[in-house]
Image (cartoon, rainbow over all chains, first blue to last red; front, side, top):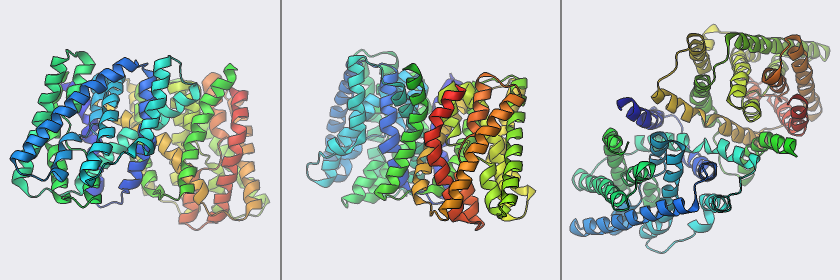
Length: 291
Length: 293
């Protein structure tokens, strides 16, 4: 069991650790370029490849996304209650609850815990989570409604095309399958290394309330995921993936949003750093529960 | 029809990845080639090597055979290229490294992988690893004009090769947690290199086209000829034969340009050789594959 847990979490620690050391030793790292390579090219290819290779049915895709939609609704509730009770500004603290690190950290965990099936299910959640972050999350930071993610995010197109193959049962041509499988290999390692670099540049400050928010976010994340998985009667990979993805820490792109819209970047950075560190420390326990 | 599907399954991924790099450069978005090269050579490639040799077990004879055949190819390239350079009265330090070491990594590895799966990748890696070590030692020594043995021990690939060899000889395998990690990190090598290749093709400052075009085409023709000759000489069959020929027929490596630039050895002309030979090989690659598959 210990070896199994190690085989799931070691890749995350090692890859993020490489990025962390890279950042700490002051080597140049163009986060924007690597992010573009990983998210605009690698991730759409990985999503297409994982969804079509396994012949995930559109129903299974919808079921997973539906379950995570319930999770998101609960997160929104928990977030609203927390910021009201703690008198925190919604524009900085609400998205922290709804945008979790389902890509960087969630996907490799799903992959190594449940194999290709786990990766495909994890991607269903990641897609919904990204769409939600880049629409609702973005709008909360911006203070206005934004929906341009629907046409400027390549991931949406890749998933749309994958859904066509999934629902018609047609196999993608060999060249397309090979290309997406090859390019998909960029996504996870580059995202994890970037995560490490990003964390290495962040400082944790303003302790007290930040720590409380992080603890609530992670505890609520895990409990909501666990509860919804139980209520819906999920088992096996679906259950594990829903719980893992729900328990993920604050997404790194919140920092970019906060920067862009002049919100509280220092607090956002602290929350990302603290929640990620806490989540990493709790990973063995989380794996013990879901495996 | 089936052969077209098979061929397109091999060459289209390579084209598309390179096209992404070309597009990236066209759009004018910054791309830090140095960062990607550093990630790929220091982390990705060593991981890819050990991960592949965890998945594939070559029998020691097959391994020795492909290693010797690869070595014979590199020696033949060196001799033929040297003769040409002397005949044309060119500067050895500028042109010899570029003609000696073909693009066996970013282009040779995916082609071999899609043609023959993991066993093909393992064979292609043997050819590639010998070239990489040779290129970073002998190749850079020729370009720089002096040889330092200490440099050899700074090549991460060397250590990966040692680990892979040890695993093949002892039959020992890495525990799952190491394998998962290196397999994940190794996955970025080929796509990252291909995108970087596409980007570099547009960024290279090309000069002296006539001579570099001639030398680039010479590299390809020499590669095909030597590949077939050595494959026959060693009586190779199946995947081993195809891979020795494919790897030999690869265009001028982008790393030659890096050395040429670093030591100021006609970088513009070496860039021309890279661009011309890569462009030509895009056209000739499908035909070469038809011959060897």
